[in-house]
Amino acid sequence: TTRVLTGITTTGTPHLGNYAGAIRPAIELSRQSDVDAFFFMADYHALIKCEDPERVARSRLEIAATWIAAGLDPEKVTFYRQSDIPETTELCWMLSCVTPKGLMNRAHAYKASVDQNTEKGEDPDDGVTMGLFSYPVLMAADILIFNANKVPVGRDQIQHLEMARDIAQRFNHLYGKGEAFFVLPEAQVDDEVATLPGLDGRKMSKSYDNTIPLFEGGSKALRDAIMRIVTDSREPGVSKDPDSSHVFALYRAFATPDQASAFRRSLEEGLGWGEAKTQLYELLESIIGPMREKYNQLMADPSSIESILQAGALKARKQSGDLMTRLREAVGLRAPA
Ligand code: TYM
Image (tube, rainbow, N blue to C red; front, side, top):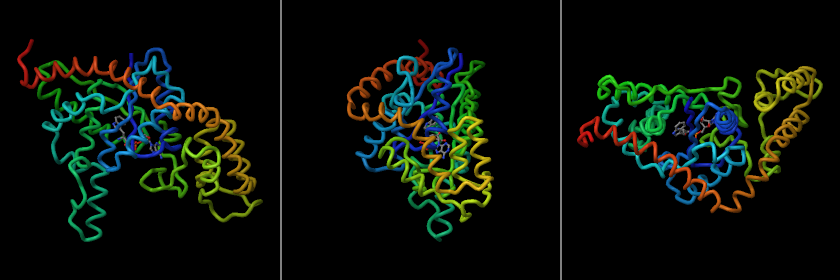
């Protein structure tokens, strides 16, 4: 069997990029019979960028409800909250002790902060916490604690997966004595939606404030956001270039191949942007609408989500506990039993 694992940071409202890049492919994988799936809310990671406890709690609830509304079966999938698995932070420390600082210096998120500071003529490490700096080590711990083989993610997470493999390899080499504690995880990226664009054409991201919410705000918020997508100034009747259009990229990420080619043809034949956006809205609403009802029911009953997560934590910790026992012995913290 293949073990599939992925997580979402609990700092914001789930958007179309999270859904198409991670949630949808992950749920599809989880339905295969030879797959053992682990999906979680990355709430330790949330503390890195968010000091608002209410927002972290609210986002965790929204993300959990989103997974279930999108079709996750909690009976089949191990579905949990990262902070319910304290072994993750213990493993994170062990991994930190074998991770070269130089490897972390290359992490995109950290480098972006350093570059920004340098441009402004400030101290390069201004505002950089140890949490941000060692973020990829915590992510490696999430993956390695359950020895996942496949990690469905958007393109922005590929570097983190490479780092997780490096760290796993180093640990195996130092302590394995012929036994590999960790399998080397692989990113699974769906090329069609590897980077879903946001309203302005940049990657759809909470940090760019260009997201289209998946469920929050209902169909009205969905429609309003779609109408704000930036397009070129071609008038109706003038041929459009689908491949440079974010409206088309979004449409294609949700359409069947036949629907996508028909939409491409219409744009080339001069479909107006207003009408194109209406068609995008109708397509999305037909997919999201039914899921939104389930989402709203779940959001109205947080205790049902809480009990699902507690059951998930129980299932997950059976595995993480066994691995940690072996690792404590391997590094010399405990005598072998
Ligand atoms: P996060 O919370 O930023 O994003 C969650 C998932 O959504 C994907 N994604 C996108 N995919 C396509 N197009 C987009 N515009 C887009 N925006 C977001 C991300 O690639 C991601 O798959 N560090 C992770 C959370 C995490 C994790 C893990 C993931 C923590 N531990 C272990 C996998 C395994 C993060 O911040 O993702």
